Length: 79
Image 1 (cartoon, one colour):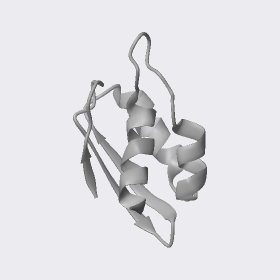
Image 2 (image 1 turned 45 degrees about the vertical axis):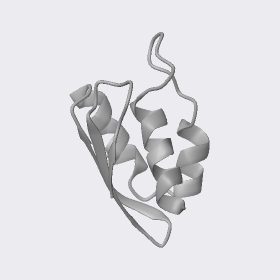
Image 3 (image 1 turned 60 degrees about the vertical axis):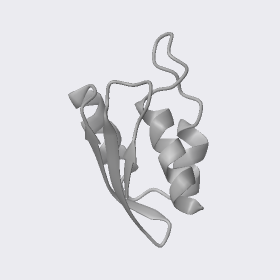
Image 4 (image 1 turned 90 degrees about the horizontal axis):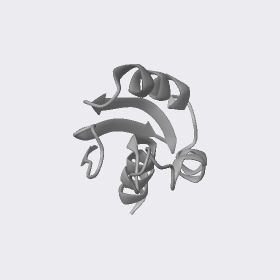
């Protein structure tokens, strides 16, 4: 699935999930080191755990962040 982000530097997030486990996460744009690290940490994690951990994360004075946007994308995927 590809999710178009809003309110962050990253333009979109693409991810693959199998049996509710995150297989791959790709961020287009954003802080390269942070998004690469986040992707590596999340691979192999349960979708529900990722949502619970990342939801509501803010970036500076923004109301959202790349991790928060991923939680929103995963929630949309579950529907």
